[in-house]
Length: 431
Image (cartoon, rainbow, N blue to C red; front, side):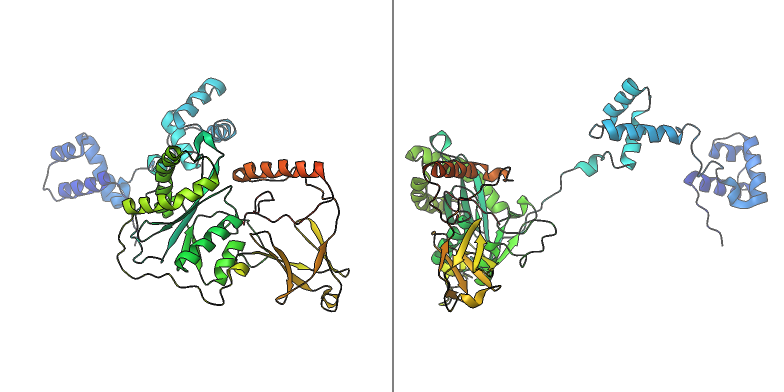
C-alpha cells in the first residue's frame, strides 16, 4: 500500500474529477471549481485515468525553487555574518551584506538562513521566561531565605558594605539582619550562629549559588563537595538549598529592594554612618518592618528545632582544613609555616593528617583526633603573590587588606600570625 502526501488543492481536484467521471458535473463546472480552462481539465482527467491520484502530484515537489539562491551564496553570506555581524538582526545584516560585500539578498531570506543556523531567534524564542509564583511554606522555620545585598547603605556618609538578610518563607518576616564588609564565609558563620541561638535550627536555608554555599568550580575533585558553610550546616543537621534563579527566591530579593529604599532613608534620618551604629539600629527597624509587612503563616506550628547539648557552635562554625604533617613535624596553612612542638604526642604524627581549626574570633587550633597540639609559627617574611585573581565583589575588602598589610610590613616585618580567611584585616576566603 502506497501513501501519498497531497496538498488540499490536489485532494480537491481528485474529488472534482471523480464527480466529473460520475457525470455529476460537467467539464465547464469542473473548470470553474478548479479555476482552470476546460482543456486543462480534460488533460488532468486523461492522466488521472491513466496513473491514478499520483498523476496529480506536483512534479516540483521536493526540488529547490527556481528562484532560490545557489548554495555557495548561502554559505558565503552565513560565513560573513558569523565573522562580522553575529549580533546583528536580519534587517541590518542584509543591509551590510549589500553595502560592504555586494550580496543583495532579501531580508526574509537572510532571516530564514540565520534562524536555521541559530544566529537569530524569532519573537517567540526571545520572550523572557515566565516565572510563576509558588505557594509559601506552611510553617515558620520550614524554609529560611538568605542573601547578601551589597549597596551604599549609608549613601555618601559611610563605606559601601553588604547587608545579610534572613527571611522566613512562610511569613516574609525578617529574622536577622547584619551589616558586614563583604559576603564572606566567616560573616555567614557569625550571622547563622546568631540566628540559631535566637530561634533554633530551621529545616533548611534557601540561598543563591554564591561560592559560600555551593562548590561552583567545574570538575572540582578535592574535598567532599561541600563548602565550609555547607559543612557547618550538615554537622547541625540543617539542609541548604540553592536556587537556580534569583526569581526563585523572590521574597528575599523583593525585601532587598524594599530595604534599599526604606532602610537607607531611616539610616539617613537617624544620622547613622558606620556599620557598628547601623547594626545597633537594625533590631528596632526589624520590629517595625515585620509589624508592617509580615504575613500570618498557614500553620501555627513552628518547625525550628532547639539546639542540642552536643551542638558545639564554636567547633561547628570554624573554618576546618586538613593538612599532612611532614617528617620534620611542619605543616602549611594560609601561606604560613607551622611547627609542631616535639613531644610524645606529636612525634608519631609524621605523615599523619591533622585538622586546622580557624575560628571567627581569631583563635587558631591544630587538632588530631580531637586533641589540641602545641605549635609555633616559623618566623619567615611572608611572600605575597602578585597578580592574584580576586572576585569583583571582594575587590574593595581585598584592597583594604593590602593597604593594611603594606603598612604593617613597613613598620615591622618580623611580627607574624596566621591570616584567618574571611575576617577583618585579613585575606577574605569565600567558599
